[in-house]
Each structure stands twice: as C-alpha cells, then as structure tokens.
Image 1: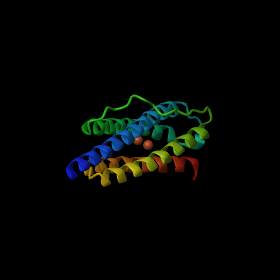
Image 2: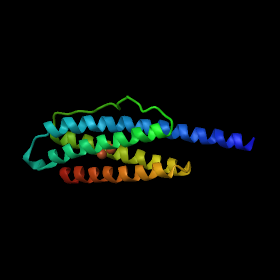
Image 3: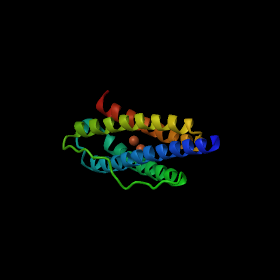
Image 4: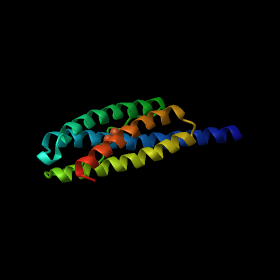
Length: 149
Ligand SMILES: [Fe+2]
Ligand SMILES: [Fe+2]
C-alpha cells in the first residue's frame, strides 16, 4: 500500500517535471527564433558587436533545446513541438529589451525546474539544468551590457 502510494507520487513528480520541461522547450524554440531574426535585423553602431553575440545566443539556445528534448525523452515524455509566442520589433533597442525580458523569464523558470528536479531526486537532470542556466545568465549580462543597464 505504502509502496503503491510512493510509486504514484513518483509518477506525479515525474509528470510534473516533464510538463515543466516541455514549457522550457517551447521557450527555447521561441528564443531561437527571436535571436535568429534579431541578430540579422538589429541596426545601430551604438550596439557595437551585440548582433554577433545574438547570433551566438541563437546557437546556444538550439543546444539547450536539444538537451531539454533529450531529458524529456529519458523521463519517458514526448518533447513538444509548440513554440511560445514570439515577440518582434523593428526597433533595435526594443529587440534587446524583448530578449532581456525573455532571458529573465527563462532563468526564473529554470530555477523552479532545478528545485523540482532536486525534490524528486533527479540529480542528473538538475546538473544539466544548472549548466543551461549558467549560459542564460551570461546571455542576460550580454543584453544588459548592450542596453547600458
Ligand atoms: Fe536557452
Ligand atoms: Fe538564453
């Protein structure tokens, strides 16, 4: 009886993690699209080499999407094909602000996911998430620097 309850709880934890990771994966798809478009359309000498950095971010986000998708599969889930709503602008400063807001939201969500993974004893997953969150924090710094924040 106790064992069954534990198994039920384990399955619920696992399902909640899979659902959360699928949200993260949709957020990574969105980030890829925004960085691909903004890196090629951002204009203005005042933004220096940020366009190049955005191009690098695009490939980091693809790398994250691949890692998250694999983790979902390991846990027995199905990786989503849904993309979170992509934002756009013709204004370079606005593009950077959109990216910064997205990164901050992403970091908040990965923090939650790390806590969730650790509570469920999924330590290999939390390791992967910690590596990813470190890159997201670097992205956040790049964008803040470019915006002079
Ligand atoms: Fe990412
Ligand atoms: Fe990022």
